Length: 214
Length: 418
Image (cartoon, rainbow over all chains, first blue to last red; front, top):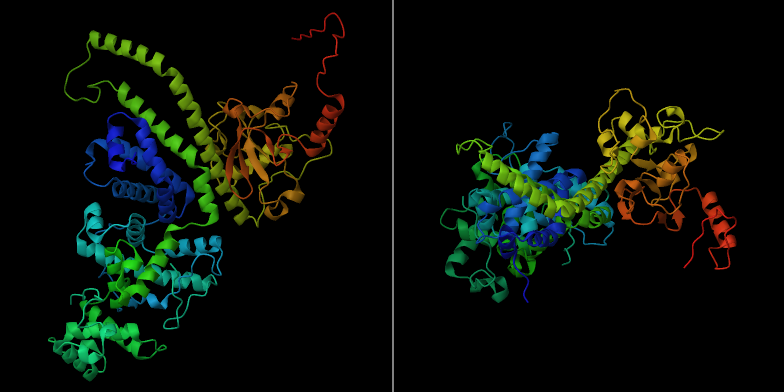
C-alpha cells in the first residue's frame, strides 16, 4: 500500500486521527531539527521552535489548504517560530524577507561579487572531520544576516522552485531570486573566510579549485 | 540590466562543443567580434550586441583557466561591472555566471546533474554548499537522534493538553455574545466532565508521566549547555563549591552545611548564573523549587528538594579533561542516597523515584542525555562507589540466593515457600 502523503495525513489528523500527526512529525523530524539547528545556531532554541511549530500547526490546522504542499508550510511556520524565539532572546535583529537587497549602503561602496569557483567546498571525509566542518559551517551561517540565513536554509531544506518559495513566503519572485543569490554569495564568502580561519584551506580568489564530488 | 538567461547547452549557435567558432550564427559572430574589439569587456559593447556578447563572455569565462589577473578575471570584472550598473549594494552578490548557475540549479530541483554542462561545475559547488548546510556534525546528529522519541512525545502531549483546554473551554466564556450560562448548561457540562474524566483519566496519567519525562530530558539538555558554558568560563572546570570531601565529613548534608554538601557543587551552576533553578528541578519531584527564594542561596534547603544527583566531585576530577568523555555527570536523583538518608534499607539496583521508578536520565560529560532503565552503565552502578559494588558482588557470590534447603531461624521468622 502506498505511503500516505503529508497532505492526506494532515486531513486525517483534522478528522480526529491523532496518530496521523505523529506520522507526519516522525517523517519530518530529522530534517526540521537540522534546519532549526542551523537557523537558530542554538540547540535549546531549536528544541523550543520545534515544539512551538507543531503547536502552531495544530492551532492553524483549519486554515491549511490541503491542495497545497504541507512541508513548505511546516518549515515556514517553524522559521517564524524560530524568529520569534530568537527575537525574544535578543539574539539577532530580524529583517523581513521582503526587505530589498540593494540600498542602505551609505558609504557608497560598490557591490562585492562572488564567483563560486573561487570557493572550495570539501566533500565529506576530506581533511576536515565532520565535527569541525559542522562548526565552521555554523560559523559561516551565523555570520549571515538573519534574512539571508532564513531564505538560504528554507530554499536548501525545502528544495523549492523560485515560484514556490515566492508563493510560500508571499514575496515577489524577483525578490526571492535576488535574495537567494545574495544569500548564496554571502555564504560562499563567509564559508571561505571561516574555512580559512579554521584551517580548512579555503582557497584564495582565483586559485585553482577542487571540484565538489557528488 | 536584465541578467541573461542560463546558457542552454543545446543552443547550437553558442555551444562550442558542436563545432568551431565559424559555426556561430552571423549575429553571434558579430557579437564575438564586438567583444574582442571591446577588449573582452561586454560593458563596452554596444547595446545591439551586448546580450549575445555577454553570453560569449560567459562561455569564455567558463573555458578559461587562467590564474588571477588573467583573462577570466577580466571577464568577471567586466561582467561585474555590467551587473553592477544598478548602483551600490550592502551585501555580497553572485557574479553573473554563478548567478546563472544558482538559478539553473534551483530550476533543476537542486539536482546539479540536471544543470546545463556549461554551468555544471558551479552547480556542483552549490550542491556542495547544500550538503554542508543540511548535514550536521556527529554531536548534533546524535542529539537529534537521541531526543527523537521524547521530542515527538512532548509535542503529542502538548497537543493533547491543548485539545483538553479546547474541550473544556465553555462556549461564550470569551464573550462571544451568545449570552450567559443557564443551570442546564452547567449540569450538562458537569455530566460531560464526569464522563470525560472517567474515560480520559488513565490516558491523561500516561500523558502526564510522558510529559514529565520529556521535560526532564530537556532539563538534562539545558544542564549540558550550562556545564559547557561553565567549563568555558572557568578553564575547563566542572562546578565545585566545596574544598573537597573526606575527613569524616558527609556530602549528604544538603542545606545545613553547604560547604560540605555535594549538591552545593551542582548548585554552583545556578549561583554563577549559568542556568536557572528550574533547569535543575525535575517535574517528577514535586518538592523541587523552581525559583530562588534567597538571592544569595548556595544550596538547596534539604535533600528532598534536590532533583538530580551529581557526580561526587573531588578536586582531582573537577576538570573536564580529568574524566572520560562518557563519564556520567548527573542523573535523576539517587534512590539509594534518599533511603540511606532516611535510615532505610537500600536496593542497589533501584531506579530513580523521579519517574515512578521506571528508569532515569543520565547526562554524560560529552553533553548527551539518555534514558536508562537500569542504573548500571557499562558495568558500573551509578548509585554506588566501586568498592561497595564489589563488596555487594562478593557477598552475593559467596552467600548466594535461596537454594531450597533453608529453614526458618526462629518461630517469629516469617519465611514462605511455594
